[in-house]
Length: 228
Ligand SMILES: C[S@@+](CC[C@H](N)C(=O)[O-])C[C@H]1O[C@@H](n2cnc3c(N)ncnc32)[C@H](O)[C@@H]1O
Image 1 (cartoon, rainbow, N blue to C red):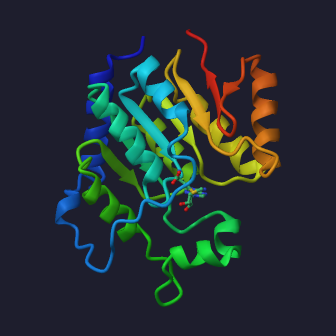
Image 2: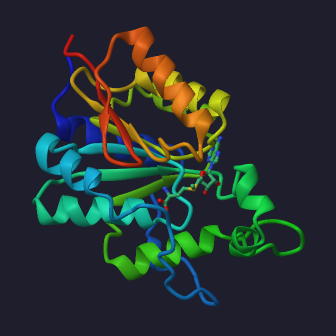
């Protein structure tokens, strides 16, 4: 049986404390960074749909970049008075080849001595958003995060997938996190478009294999895990 939402949120916070990630974002020095909420599709109606209809308390986001979509979800948690938490899973290394290939995106990685320095941008945006209590972060690959969260028996209500966009990456993220999702939980993601055929193929294959109903908006996909 799945534990009540607030207990599952408490378990996640306890895990973060144990691995020394219970930081006070306001205590982090982000001098040199100005708020910059550039992102992709964070105003899509799917966020409102998921949060208004399903009231998720434990939300995982795979791929957060500067935090725009996580902050959007945090805003909705506030607006609907849901005591939820968004856990942002990202390397903050732009682990997505197009983010390196496209010069404009590469600049946003803020390379310093040949290494990305964009985590400060994420934190600056969280500070500016006022949602410090609704957002936490896990700075690692999604594969590593799936193993860690499983080891701590973390059970999310909703999972938003927007990390690597190759077919194999999306397929691995879907498969790796599906088993964590609570029965009846929501998995959704970005870039279900012709521009990202790998995402479309991975989602289509998973939906067909599992016999799920695919929903979504123009660019986002969504499935609901069957109740046990
Ligand atoms: C498209 S951006 C996320 C955009 C964000 N959701 C938004 O709407 O603003 C993709 C992010 O995924 C991260 N990423 C890609 N592959 C990853 C992986 N395997 N593990 C962790 N993070 C990854 C990148 O570092 C990048 O920040």
